[in-house]
Image (cartoon, rainbow, N blue to C red; front, side):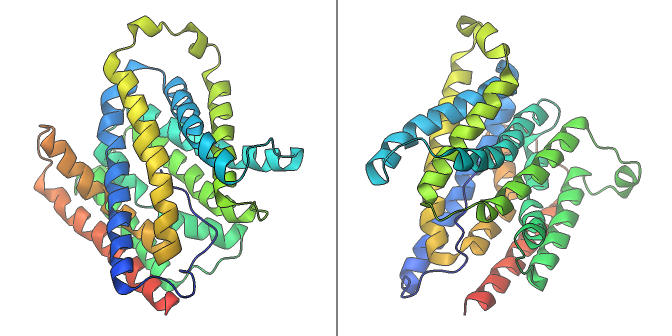
Length: 313
C-alpha cells in the first residue's frame, strides 16, 4: 500500500484550487491502483507461497527505487541504530502483506477491501498512544462508521451471521495484518530521525524484504521456477511496479498538497472499487443486502474529509 510522510498539513504557500483538485484526483487514482491488488492477489496467491511472492515483490520494488535514492540522496548503508529502526518499521509492513496474500487463499478480495477500511481509524488510535497525536471526533466517527460498514459487507447484512460469528479464517488473518499496518503507519513518525522520507521508505522497504526472506526460509530456494505460471510472475512484477513503486511517489506528491488524512480517506472507497473490478472480471454480483455497507463506508470517507478540511483551515 502507499507510504506516509510525517507532515500533516499542506505546505505554506501551497497549491491553487486547481492544484488541489489535481491532487485529489491523483489520491483517488492511488486507491484505484491499490484496489487492483485484491482481485489480482486472489487470482495468483495459490501459484506461489505468499512469503516468497511478497519477498520478490519488495526486492524488485527496492531495486527500482535504489537508482532514484542514489541520484537524489546518495545510497550508503545506514548506521546500526538506523538499521534497527528500519527493521522495526519493516517488520509490521512485511507481516501485513504476508497476511494479505495468505488470507486471500481463504477469503475474497471484497472482504479484505472492506476490512481494510478500518485501518485509518486504527492508525489514529495507535498514533494517539505511540506519538501523542490528537484523534479528533471526525476520526472516531469515521472509525465507528468504517467498522459498521466493513462488518455489514463481511456478514452480507445478515445479523444472524454476525451473532454466530460466521467468519472465515482468511478474514481473521487479514484483520491481524491490518492491525500490524496501523502500527506501521504510527511508527513512521515515531521512528523518524530527520532523514529524507525517500531514504526512510527505501530502507524500510529493504528491511521488509529481509523479513520476508527470513519468513520464506527454504521455500524460496526450493521453488521450482519452471513450474510457476507466467501470469503469477507477471502479477508479481505488476504489484512491485504499480501498487508499490508508483503508488509511493503519488502518495508523496498528494500528501504534501492535501495532507495525509485526506489522502487516507480515499481508502474508504476500496470496497466499491473492488466490487466494480470483480463485476468487470465476470464475478457474480453480491447480494443487495450488502449495498448499505458500501454506503456507510463511503459516509466514513466524507466524515474524514470534512474533519480534515476543518483542521487545515
